[in-house]
Structure formats: C-alpha cells, structure tokens
Length: 490
Image 1 (tube, rainbow, N blue to C red):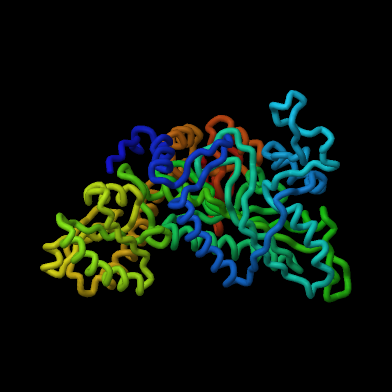
Image 2 (spheres, rainbow, N blue to C red; image 1 turned 90 degrees about the horizontal axis):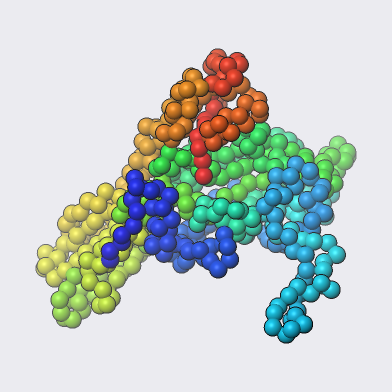
C-alpha cells in the first residue's frame, strides 16, 4: 500500500495532519472544528480509557454522569472561572425550530426562547458543585471521589485533529474533601497516576510540576501538570490536576458539619486528560513511514500475513496460523490474521507498517516445512526468522522490548533537547530552535507575559522538588531562586 505523504523534516505540521487522516484515525467533520474519530482511532482511545479507568477505580474513584447543559447563571458564581472560559463557550438560546413563512427554510422559533440560556459544558465544575450541595451535609458524606467520561465543547478558532478541536472526549474527575490536606494529597495522587500512564502505557516521558499562576486553570488555587516534548521540539500539556481550595464550595454554598460540630466549606479538586493524548502518542513515536504505536495501546499488537500462491497452500497456512493465533491470544496478545485474497502480501506489509502495528508475522509454504516464521518489529523495522515453537514467549518479550525502546527513544530525544540558558539572547536563540529551555524567572506575571509576547514561549511547568539556585531572571535581571521550564507549545 503506497503512502505518499509529507516527512517530518519537510513540514512537521502537515506530516501530522496527513498521518492522522491516512492512518484512518480521524477526519474533519461537516461541523467546523469538530472531528469524526474513526474505528482505529477510537480503539486507541478505548485502550486508554480502560487503563485509566482501572487506575481511578483502584484508588477509590467511581464513575458518574452529569448534564451536558449548564445554566449560564452558574458561571456567574465563580468570577475567575467564567473569565477563563467565556471566549470558548457555546450557548443554547432556543429550544425549537420552525418552517419559515416561505415554507422553504428552517429558522429559529423566536417564541421558543429559553428563559435562561444554557452553556454547552466546557468543563463541569459548576454543574457538579451545584449537585454536591445536595449530597453533602456532614463529614460522614466525605470524601466524594467522582469521575466522568464525557464530551466537552470549547469553541476553538484554530483547530487540529486530536490536539485542539471544538468538541473533544475526555475524563474529568471532581472530588470533595474534609480538609485542605486531603484535597492536596488527592491532587498529587492523580498527577502521579497521569505520569504513570503516560510513561508506562504511552511510552512518553513527562515532566511533573506546577503551572505558574498565569497558566493555571481558571478557578484553581494551584494547577499541576505533566508536560511532554514532541519530536519537533514543541511541548504538549498531557494532563492537569487542580487543587481548587474552597473556591467552588463557597460559590455554590457547599458546607458540611465537621466532627467538631461546626459548619465548614468543602475542599475540592478537579483533574482531566483528553483525546489530545492520541495526538501526543502520534507525535512522540511516529516516523516518515507512518504510525508507531506502543504495544500496550495498539489496537492490534500482532498481525499475521500468509504468503501463498495456491488455494491449497492457503488452506495449509490457515490451519497452522489458527493454532498460532489461539496460542498468542491465550497469552493476552491481540492478534489479527489477514488472509484476504483481495490484496497482495506486499500491500498488507505496507498497510500494517503504516498503521503502526508493533509486530508483523509472515508465514509461507517454506516456513511450514521448516516450522519457522518471520518476525518484523515496527519500531526498528528489524526482521528475523524464528522457530514457531515457543513463539508466544518470543512475542511477549518482543512486545516488552518495543514498549521499553519507544520510551527510551523518546526520553533520549527529550534529554538531548533540554537546555539551560542564562541570558536573554541565549534564550531567544534556543526557543527558536525548540526544546525545553531551563531559565531563571523573577516570578512575576508581568515578566512572564512579556516573554510570551516577544517569543511565543510560555512557562510549561515549575518542576516538583525543583532545585533551588541563586540566579538572575533572563528577561528582567531581577533575582531568582530557581529555573523554570519554558517552551513553545501546542
């Protein structure tokens, strides 16, 4: 299967866009800025969901579902929250259409105007905290550890499949706690879960840290994040966990009777990751031959392709492959046997290589005679002939090797593209080249904004347990006690 598309060096952005479409992951829809996630792309999301959902439930969280529509008045209750999302909100004003007077057009029925306009959720803090007010009366009702899998709408002007679309899929956790300490521990627990998932399932190394006050979530006291570096030297925020303090509890009057018999406001967190993780997966590992998927998240881990000339040979191969497939599946490996006669083996090789299937097995009549099979791994494109006996153990080890190799390859890329600079000229030069740039900052939002205006770089994170060192801010020259991570970002 010939796949002529841009290379990363020629045009990284175009390479990404073409890869998403040609690998059958997603496509643009008839609705501007929205995407259709195709079965192969959705299968990756399902694997992500399954892994994360188990992690959440293993730490005591439960799934629930809250309305898509949020009364506009709810947003007025938390000023910084509404300010942060106001420009992205889609608003429902009417609830009915009608045929126009000319009998040809569908128009809004002005008699069906809503008494209160509804916001299509950009995030669910407001509707959930209005609900929690009914659920919480006493410390005995705490903690509440809720997650929901849902879609949200943020009316983006410039969109890109998976990375930034007007509607996207995500999970959002919303928890309520008795004390500030419990809520802070929850925030960091979730950050660790996200980092674990990114590194051990996605094979994407991440930096853990805190957002600056300028970059934090609207309505949060503190926002923690995981940041990944893509192959083009740009950063991508892969997940966020927010300590909300008592902001939303106060806005929605959510109080509980404490053990000391006092009325107190609840402490809160919220946290989420979205389908942009698929974008991170693509940009971290894929190459000019197509997708490269880590085995733990690949919809198909192993594809088997028969090579034959006659129907009799195919029937012999079918019988042998059936037993190989059953053996591999019994070990928890997802396998596809592609014995379609409508495509040549060479076309199939190219197709599954482009779709990033981690391991390809090829078997023909001569292999049957020798009781052997050819293995090709997608990450290195290395091929070898191995005995069929014990193939399950060989494949299990190979999948682990591929998972580890992808992680270390991405880690090496990050380490080779992380730089410390001490002057403004050095900073500007390095930011243009890309990568994570470690630099001193004086801690003021004014300086942060000026740096962003002049270079388009933002503070991606202030690292957890950040080493303290005396220095001077690269922009203002004022004293600084630590370096922070700057980068241009998606």
